[in-house]
Length: 512
Image 1 (spheres, rainbow, N blue to C red):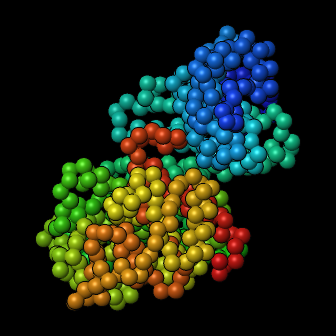
Image 2 (image 1 turned 90 degrees about the vertical axis):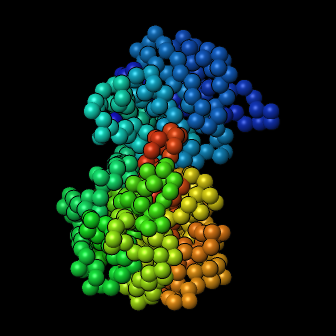
């Protein structure tokens, strides 16, 4: 689907479906829903009152993302009305969800050429246009790579062109809106890249695939890339990462992709993604059949980081950004690490393995040490790390762990702008006692209670001075249902959040 902008009034637009928006009436009790005066006039003059009739028939109240539709005998044959909810509570995420709801309805009506009349809101025009475009491109994404029949109307998204109408825009507003639409395209494309990496099975997306994806991004978008194999990682002392990798027939791939701006950068940051392309659990094998079948998603952090790389290279911030993935499988063979083994990470800290299924934190340990040696201003890692975080926060909210309040606040602000929900979790230092070992510096897992907290405290041992945040995205990396602009399956969670954070960092002091 393609998005475009036009300054036409709705009666002058040519297409088969118009999507309109209306806010819910406010009051106690709430009065009946009424169309804005401009839409009432259009309904009377163009559609013979069809919109008012369907509103009354369905008792439409304008609740957030609620939808009604009707057909007319006019040139615009199909109308979709979407509720925005309480106008005093409307956010960019509400705009995204309303846009997606309207386009889903247009798809169900088999519409091909669709217009969206800009919602009446106090939110900045450029942000609204970008949010609408992001949502539309994402809801239209249909992953049909592994189907024998592709792209037909029966299984593809029918809407081909979506035009955002800005009939009253000034030249300045129009230029800003056009720029916002252009920004949305690479952000959505990066999110779709992450979705497709996560959704693909483990025989398709391997450590080698992730490394080749990074090479392709570097070639296409003018970035630098380095991929370290076993020998190079061993020379750097990455015993934790290589301990996980040693049971797989596929070689480990330590990926370091770098975006450098033109001129002197305003700062340097590192984004690290957990890259387990399949996690059997190792000798502590996963015993639940559904759980092990979903372990193709255990590289969701890596997918988000590579998706963010795609978008960031196109948006060209004035920051230097390092994208790091320690990619491997966690398999079972005669070479597998055993419970009780001791590994030495690249900062010389020793780890007693008491559970081979807590492998992601081992790969991240060496990635964090590598990132800090780059002398960056801040590090953010994303990982599908713990089931405990899913128990705590559910399947739509990621956990944010950071000992640095300023960095945590930046990421929370980026989360609010992107609509990808995070909740800051405690890093209770006393819980680190649960990782104490009699034979090594620490164990790789602690007691079951507070499992996501002890995991974050484990990672903290591999960051010395650099401001750092850990995002546990085990819940929101996958959705079991369609909702908003998220289609069932891989969500691409984290891409837009990382982009928002990096773009905002340009305006902050390097020490922030």
